[in-house]
Amino acid sequence: MSHIVYILHSKKLNRYYIGYTSNFDLRLEFHKNAPPNKYTANANDWTLFLNFTCTNKIQALSIEAHIKKMKSKKYIENLAEYPEIIDKLLLRYKSDY
Figure (cartoon, rainbow, N blue to C red):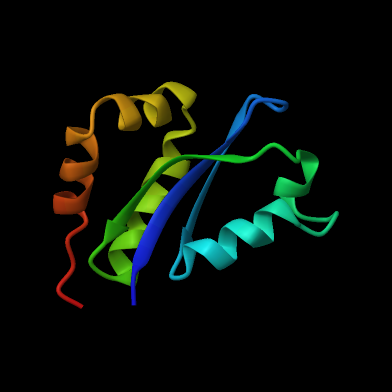
């Protein structure tokens, strides 16, 4: 089973959405057809900005929470521009479980 942290971007909203999934294709389809009460239903132009695989669910959820806690578009953009930041996050949140 894969554990993926992903970031979607909407040009319409000029916003990012950070998430975790173990089935990326299914989750992306959900976002594209999100029910009206879900955040991603506010736009129909979500595209994949960045994704990366983690070793386990605990690591993926920890990194997802870290990125959300930063509350920074610049930080998210830097993740794509400087992949070594992702490497550091993977090491920082390494889990043996």
